[in-house]
Image (tube, rainbow over the protein chains, first blue to last red):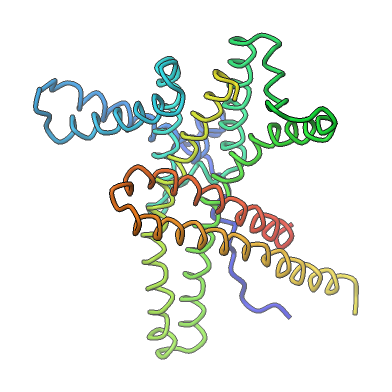
Length: 250
Length: 78
């Protein structure tokens, strides 16, 4: 027996936009959201930096707060060499932050809820930090997998474990962001489905009782706002930590 | 019981079992914030310095719960 079921994952399917031109080049709603995120970041910075006041106005203050937040994160985690990586970390942080935030609005698409997008970002960070490690240290970077002060008989056990945990970094980085976004949106859809099923099944009493899932959904909006910012921060700080490992090798 | 409904039954049971894994994350996150609260009680001045590491630890622990949730969703929907 199968009653009315809630289609939790249908909201993540891609549709093409921009009419016939979009269908020709497969310009999906995910691409639209990414383009919107990029345009919003660039426009905010263009407007904020145009004023150049010593005492900043509102937009300039917002831009300066974001800049200093990410720059302090880079310098504290990577050290003085962090200045070279600051543009990369800031791009990743702001792109993921806006991707998460755009998905919070109804009928908009959260492009970070697709594993393809988050895996691409995480693989880039992984390959880039490994390449930086080999560039700075040469083949001595492989000594990263041999921690200092380990007795020799333990090494054949420890080095494979270290290598496997290093190779699991892109997986954990991508799945963390993807699962957080997907779980949030699925919970919204499921509780909204509960509201509709209550109203359809129990009539007026169901409509009154559906205030409970509605209240849960409103609380979930607050939680998802927190999660959106937190996941962008965690992705950025883990990027900084991996770059610290690559540059300092401990 | 015919194979198709047996498969649906097994899917539901498997998804339910996979969700047990999120319990560990509940313990870990409660532990983390409990020790944060007690260390702020001992040394309130260290609160801002410590809070960033608390958020990082929370997100890393939450990720493990979400791995279990992803497996449950994969079992349920494919």
